[in-house]
Image (tube, rainbow, N blue to C red; front, side, top):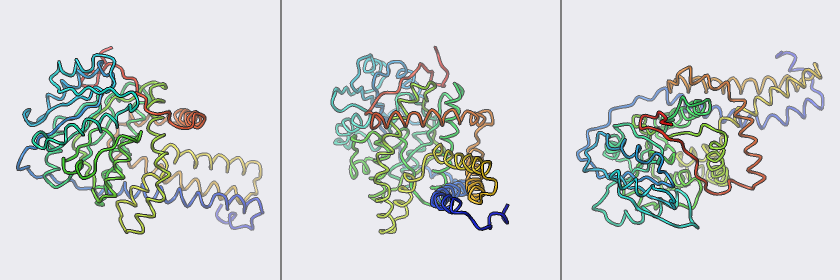
Length: 421
């Protein structure tokens, strides 16, 4: 094939190659960057965190909108943390609730802050409102841990956060994983995706001294950081927005893989659509700033800023996989129609090499994250997910955006992650 590719190309061949070449370069750069982070994760050697001299007073802050179904079980689970009970307090933000969320929160020993604001709805606004009430009194809390109302923490979570703050880290992100892994192919597929996005890439960034990104759940902040860079609830994806603000201030986010937060993930298409619209709508809204952020990082020689810009610019794995697959399909059809077409051979060679590199990244990442084969087999459903996701994008374009904040529906769960219903 290599010898045939060197034959003089026709005008159609040259046009095909010219159209593909910029995409090959961009996709290759993205995959090389991901492979570099994967190598960093493989080379990571975690050292035990030092024994803290003191146990900080930590506020576990739970924004909750109509969460009566699971809040009691979540609060009961937090009482089993291996951290002295007098040194942490659970505060529930009952945000625009029309059910028994506030009542259940108090019945299970939490402090409850009730908020009603129909104009400013959503998690970001709720956190902003609560932090403005809790921060002015420095005697109450030294740090704040934000936890979703459908999530559980590993018993060591607060101890790890305390030890990381003892090392001088002002912002720490725990490993964000799936609670209901075995409930369906969607949750298993999400487990694979989070293994790459929430474990492999952050671990690689730890190795290179880069900053993790906030995931919106299981993230801990020192009082000093929140006072220096106030929280804002104006963005749908307030975690990504706040990540950028922190990094621009020179504040690095430490990844703590030994502290695990697990959340319930959608099992049905309707639930998944609500969540995905919120995530992708906010992310693509921020992408408009990505190239300006990249240029700023290059100009100021700040590698953490460059890395954050790259994280926004690199397409999510589904999109990253889809184009090479389409390139191979188009190249194959072109070669079938015109067996002598040099451009078709170039397409097959270029996109095939990129797809092979992506497969290497996927395989290495899932292996490093120790994803069981039974869970990884959910990748067989990826084509169905790709069609569904691009259909969702089409609907978002027709509606011109994510449509604002919407709550993702839950089902009943136990602290251990097993359904009761």
